[in-house]
Image (cartoon, rainbow, N blue to C red):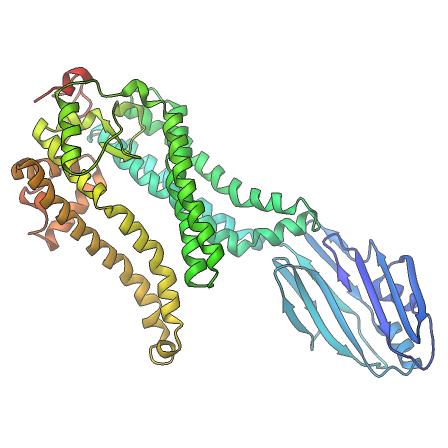
Length: 523
């Protein structure tokens, strides 16, 4: 018996060589509680076969389908035909809720359906069996995961607007960099939420296994996180308005939120899928395909992002600073395609600089808070990171770590000797610490090579604390770091100040603010 998502029943019965041939249609109609359309109830080669479908066997109310099956008349007919037993299979679409009020039934669950099996024997009294399936309100609880980033963005917005004594651009850099991590977290949370919700089963249930179900499934995967992202982006407008002089530029926010972060998150998700396919499921072809898609997605999305940002009008004009940066990049082994200088008030950047596809994007804040030699020292440090692929290595290590931990924890020789808490959760908690220590090693390497490139250790030592002060979270993290690593990288040679720089009236990030052309050649 197959029950569809609308409550219709498709039923097939075959009795092998009964001693007495008795029509089954009346008993089957009583069993399902409805009349069948053009049923086939006949004998074929000594076997009695019944097949038919009924549209109203089960009642659907909202997203729940329920009804009962009364086997008593059928059991009476089987007893007359001297049939000892009958194998019953009741199958309905996979859904978030399924309840079968009878004992002794075995359950088999597949990606498409849930099956109940039981061998029935003719008995004098066979009580009706109640069945219900579908979706209840609690089944949609995973959607509430998206309320966490929305609530967090509102708390961040409240905190940013209350920080009256902190410079607006410092607040914006802190807010927007954390916002970027949060938006990436929206997608990661929804991966877990959609897995629990089972969007594929929900789409098939809503459309009754229609050919359009895959399209609805994709919609479920994409639309909820985009809506959460839209709410968070709109909520950030007041913070951007404060940084930009009470001029909220929604298109800029949209371009950043809907292109800057997907440039990162979508390739990472494909990369993660490829690694999981190779390491967990031994699917070489699928894994290689996902890795290829990850690389192609990165190239295509970064290209689209650069085109949509329309950065050509922000090209750094020829001058001493541009020439020195290009020369420094070549010396570090990096070839820059272009250099852009963006106003911080537009809110496109979550920090004082960024590198995309060999394109260096500077914020005017960087040139306002750093001297010329300090700017060169900081950029040299970033060029070392870029040449040595430090961020790619760290990202690859983070992506590979969880599948490898899962694989390691399920090895036969490990599973039998170590408790689950040691081979599973403990390794998961240790992994971020190991990744952090790896990043600190990369930072020390970049500091050392940057000093070799510029020959100015003091410039780097003075520049890094200034850069740190442009992000509130980074500032307090560095102070926390210095308690445990007082002799760390070059940036630790200069102790951070006790507090963040206070807001100065009439300036963006300090009293030395000036126009962009003056900053290009400033000393």
